[in-house]
Image (cartoon, rainbow, N blue to C red; front, side, top):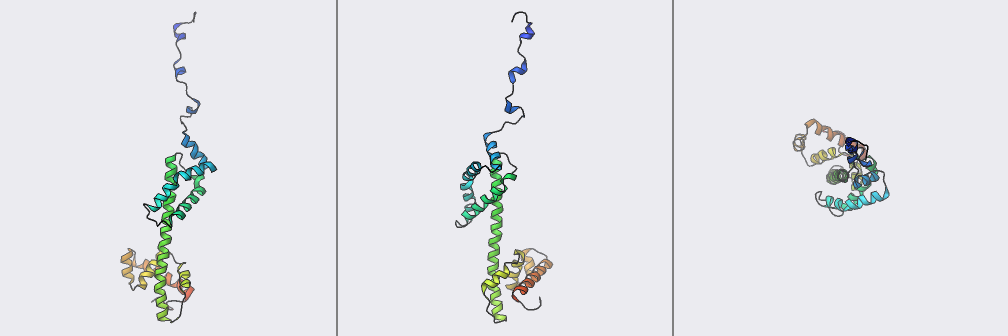
Length: 209
């Protein structure tokens, strides 16, 4: 060290705090971040590990807070996983917590769509029962329940609901009050439902009165 000045012998400050290569960008990647990136690439091992980790939670979600009967739960879980596999490359999250929130967002959509489907099935059965009574009383014609259900399958839920209430003897004003809809909306839905059914089954006469 002879011959060097005291200032030259002092270690430079930045030499004491050298950054690791992974810190140069300011972002340290955690192991879970790397696994999520592999998940987005549909890596088979990452997909298997992710869904095995969350499968039990999905079963608990549908059978617990969503109150589905046990016979529905496996299909709902499978539908959620199927949709997730298809959509995973577009997932925006980068952490395990974000991936889990994304997965259960899909589960909620599956739940809502299945609820809508089951409500539709129940409404169609209700309306079919009432229509069968009407046909037998008015036309004395034997209609098969399956034919009526096929025709009702073409109607949206809004039309099915007002049709069911109408067949129970409610007025447009009463239906509008119960469903919190304008009278005109109820009248339009009834008209369209009856028109569609006349085309398929020739029911309910020739006018809408």
